[in-house]
Length: 313
Image (cartoon, rainbow, N blue to C red; front, side, top):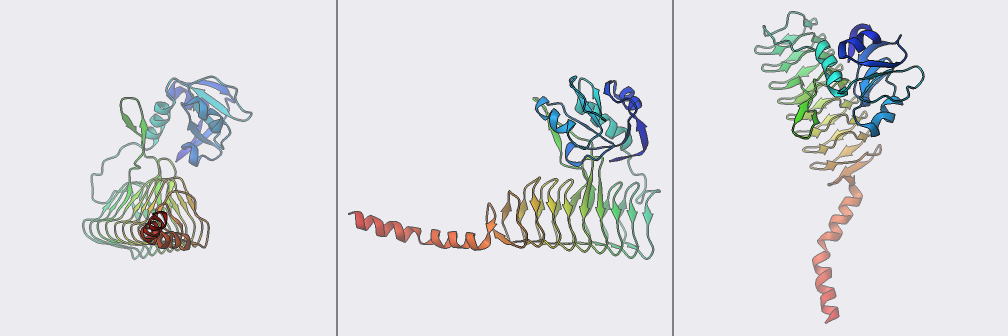
């Protein structure tokens, strides 16, 4: 998530009540969770075993709850509750703004784009040229849609990330400060849901096609010309390269990488990274030829057991 304008680190420290360690002349350009940080970003950690990961990340400003040595060229902001400080900044720059109109007054809609009745379009949405948005679609704040995009009825774009911080007594919801970015020539069928990122972007690459009832989790990045059949579900922050085909009811775990031109057959479950240009099947998904051999061998197991029991008598 980028700020509208760079913010001096002293001002950030004042806003969250933090002590400054390291450089006092930095400027913050955005705020991101550790998986999405870029130079100029703020991130945080409130668990000491993850301090090193945060300090060695690309983030420039790190919110911690303990004084530690500061790497050169970076700034540490020390507060009692880093998550609450981080979340307060996201809420300040992505405040809740209820819609008071069907189409927000600051939405931008391109030429020759057809919007059917009962479409809801949120604040700061941008829709390109020659798009077709069918009745009943909801497009939430900060969504960016390219040209020649089709979105069918009942689909929700930019719903909140399903992302909670676990406390001993409860789950605390992170404020979703990210966006959904849909590139040119994408088609999204009916009743799909695409979550915005927690702090970064959820991305659908150019020419990608989604069947009905596909769910794309927060921060997922899908490459160009992918094809996902009905009831595919993809966990948060997963990276899918170009040309990937996921057949019906494939489930994909969070934080994994599917390389380009992979094909995954129906009802498979993906729990680890997949190598490019291979066909996978099963749960957990393995190369299809391996899974089919195992299934064939398993089918012969009862007869094998009966034969061996006879030999031992």
